[in-house]
Length: 300
Length: 322
Image (cartoon, rainbow over all chains, first blue to last red; front, side, top):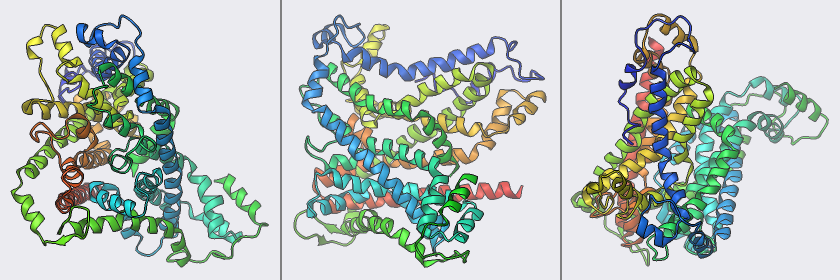
């Protein structure tokens, strides 16, 4: 870790301060840039070390782990840890639960955000600043301030330990952010488009569906990906609401096995490894959408 | 834009709902309220109602069964004398250092180095690959990160194995089990988790900075440090505010990593308000007291957020005036 925490001034030593350079010259910058590259690369490698540890120990027999330690090279390709974890938590079921919950939330929350933002950003309803403020605030709330009443209401309504209640809750929580972001995006929507459509006799619903939606589709795609990942990674509310094998999500299943006697080091690592595969796959697929989206998020 | 114009024209023939005829004034148009209705109902059910209910419960004693007993401000009085409560808020400050101060400071330097030095003196692909390495921990579910780190920091875990291998076996330690090292260890994990976020946001922000600014500064003989202070920092200040605000709120709410790493232990050395509230709600079944903890946490977060936003507005106005 110490490698990455360079105090702000350190790199100046390498950057040859005060040397006048007419044009950024790629070929004659001397050794300084290589030192900078080496330092940053070392930092990046430190970031990757835990992943390497995980890979190294996910397929190592427990016997070898206890005699040769965590850094030894696995002498055999041991898959029992992975299989134990797979069957014990019924991983396919967990994968489906997580996908169902995160997918439904992403779609529903985008829809709710768009409807809200249409009324706020384009409809400019009275008191919209207060409403947007309320959504922004909702986005900052600690879930602890909601969780007990939600738990209690869910039990009363017979929705406790269902995926549906988690979907509803996160649809609202994510759309609070989506509304806030989209309302400001739609606030700058070109008036001429709306007026042209209204002149053509289009109603509000038609304008939303045929004019606004196609124009903000890229932003909606970004929100969709964000909502999916955020919901996928959520922990507290799923932990409280989902208590059995049929409904739990991947993070909850993994955490609830912690401290279990069966979870030796290879099983823990194999479990963690298989649990992060979907997140990484998803990240790779949507990397472009995300890097675009991060700018959108930052400009809010 | 042109495409949707055409699309609207094509739609002209088809019948449309009768609302919104002609280019009438849109401001205050009541029909738009209908679009807000589903969102408002859901909001009231999932956020508004529960929030108020928690506020009410904080004034009661309740185990979750039967009727709550109204006790006024008793829970808040109890909070003031509760050393665990104070400890948990002190630990929040540590979380802010680990999740906001260090990642933002390092992220600024790292983003500038990746963008300015590595991105321009080497291939952009090099900078992108390095950025991805720093961002990778942000991708995995934070609980998975917590579990892997929990194993790495175990007495027979990888960190001690590494220390042994390099001849520093004497430093071997039960990192999370010792009250003296648990908090620093958790902080280290949180820095690892968090660092990629500012790096990625700041690098994206730097892309909208006019490269001529840097070129002009370079021609004038400004070194790396001067360019960093005079160009990079002021230019990406809006993003810095956003990152600092979102990370501060995340730090005050942090729950998953604590649950997976230490469950607040040992001896509350790593307890934080959100875990303390969870534990009070669901393990001690003191719903009123847990609600009081949550309410205090909520109020602090709201105040901090408002202070941030005000500082940002001030800074913007100062820039506008200058």
